[in-house]
Image (cartoon, rainbow, N blue to C red):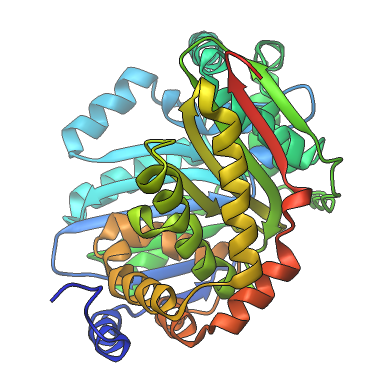
Length: 434
């Protein structure tokens, strides 16, 4: 029996039997870090993720790309090991360590076998990367050149250009637009002293979130966390608050790019992690454009009209209002019709809301597929990070499908009519002709 044909009650019963196995333990360390732990002893694997308030929204103006550069160079050398020695130790331990940078957070991911000697060795190496980075000038120069080459390639890509410009249009000079303002000049402006200063200011234990999934007991997890965080910079200067985003003047922008297709992107800031309309908006989006071939946008633009190979809509919930975006690509000659049709489908959905059939099918698919989103250590880890970063309840994984199941057609229609205004959406097209 497929998820589509299962009743909602059957799907909920199936979910409950799977979700009950996830028990999240949580505590605050003496240094002020929040730890979330899920013990999973079936496989001898340990996954750890350490998040700091060091994402790209913290990039200083004029040096956009700094947060990503700091995270990317964590494994490039410490005061005791150079880049080659670090990679050799990882290879000898069958382990993985890599920095990451997102919009709101950045940090380090670690994967190791749980055998005590290997785990201790990899934890020690991770501690060095976090607490003793050197950011060697030669490595910085190499990685900066790679970043510049990647940036230039993205600027030639019509889809990427449309996405970048849309982010600029939605957020203006707000920190959420920082990744969209990375330029050759901003990358060239980054010096080793900037990396060290950013690390000292933002890679602090107080406020960090440590997510752990795997073959480890609580007592050993406490020791691991204390080892990794105890020698981090002891900055007492509070990080500045992120200013509230303000609405930007609505515009339609066209970027001239060669090629046979026009890329279209529409968007506006909408969704916070703690948004009271969180579930009606997300469930409605699945029906509108997030549900693959089942979505209204795909049915109208691809199946009925053949205007595009694929179209999707999505929300990105953030601490402040994250973006709601619709994106697609179409033949140049049909760009006007594709954009018009997209706006008509959106307007119709806002006005009418979903049908009962659409709602039931969306609920069954979301709830039935939800356990598959975290059915491994590596999948579960980012969910723990989100729970820690946004102070969500430890029961979030169980609460999510129950909240989805309770959403009504009236709630979806009400939320979308109040929160989504097609006239306030920025529009960016990128192609050969306007």
